[in-house]
Length: 627
Image 1 (cartoon, helix red, strand yellow):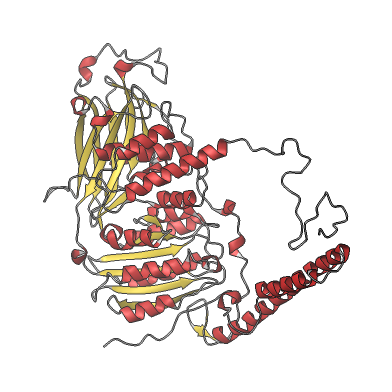
Image 2 (cartoon, rainbow, N blue to C red; image 1 turned 60 degrees about the horizontal axis):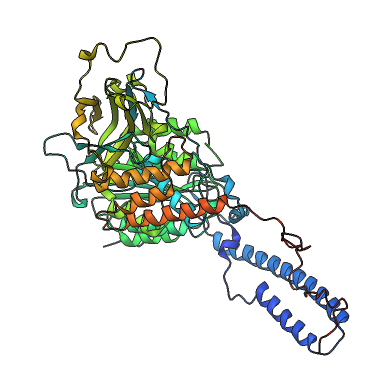
């Protein structure tokens, strides 16, 4: 028998959030409408134009005063209502319920300028000379947040700031038809494909793909999940807390009796809402989520500490133990030092507790923090902008989100200077590793979830082509000598290292990439290859890449539309629409803005006037009534 949930939820809220309609207080809009009717009736009375004009000005000012007075009355009424609602439950810093106390009203987050979003600018990878730096090393990345935030911006008619789009997260948002690994082998398969580059003539594009073994939801095993939820004032808008609540309902619907769920909320203080409730106790979970409300500042650091304490309390050996942080990333009270947060998360990661971050909303969004916290917590970062995205991350890809099949996965590619003159890695700028880090098992790297795929692209130039971006060295080994040192059949040698979740020593995989595996024409490459090239192409265009010499939005459109392939969920078709939107915005941004009207003395923009002020006819200076 299910137990009835006893309210423990805490609401340190903006009183205006509790304002209920129908309380007998006329709205400002209704008052304004009545006054407009009065103005119209007066105007029909036959009075002189000048008298009417003076009356209209006085009434416009009166409307403004009445509206301001009514708004003040509504705010006062809301405070009284908030006192009544909040009196039974006020949370202390340790989660205890105290007597009545009304939190101060937070600032109006709806008015926050978009410039307060925090997106880190990346310095794009440069072109490397294979004869000087033949080895490229990086950590894998399975985050998708950058693509989802980009989608939201484009739908709002805005382009991201150049350099802030993480191309690897765009690539890894999409599924590709990589083969599953064979049984009793490595936890993921490795695929390589080589074809002419769409970005530059006389260059090649190398695709490296990893695919983790799949695991049905029924075989995930027991899960110990702690929802760490931001209920501060910045989460009040509809695209934040309300969307978060619905998203987590989708997730809890996938759980069973073997799972444990805890909920920690944080605002001005942090507190426990649920402590280890059974995963199939739908009534309690749903009620707890629905009772959440937003208000106060953000003490994220204290909430993280409390969440990890609950995760350790209900720890499941050989199970899934994970904290899921859902927030807009606006940490502004408490433990807010970035290094302190990272140190805390890395310490708990060593205890077998991972961290997944889910981002919501824009306006004061901290994308950099969300991505880095998930990176250090052996988890992944997703941005939830729609309910459809919540379903994708928390239902369709639940196994990938929760269950790690390999950790500290590193990639190293050694290019053959006898065949390859130059190369560049597209994306993964903040995942770069030193060459010696590849063999150092103490150096942290990314994780792969069950069924997840990872894609990386290199653009490279063959020695025989010429047209190098870098001048040849005066001193060093001549390419015509010592040819026996190099293979004439391999353009590169691919190595990967990974650890199984319970291991501390890495295992090595290696694969030669042969010259003869290349196709002659880009059209001969697979749909997956060409679509991945299109996705990376859009990311580079948006970032203002200096390395796209024969590539623009027109070529991008042709490339993407030719490679839609099998698209059961419509994500590739959605990408095409976003691509066209980006092209249109880019084009409109390049149009000159006319600041004056030709042949007219009217100012531009037009001078403002008060709402409700009647228009004057210049041909009728006295504004006399026309018969």
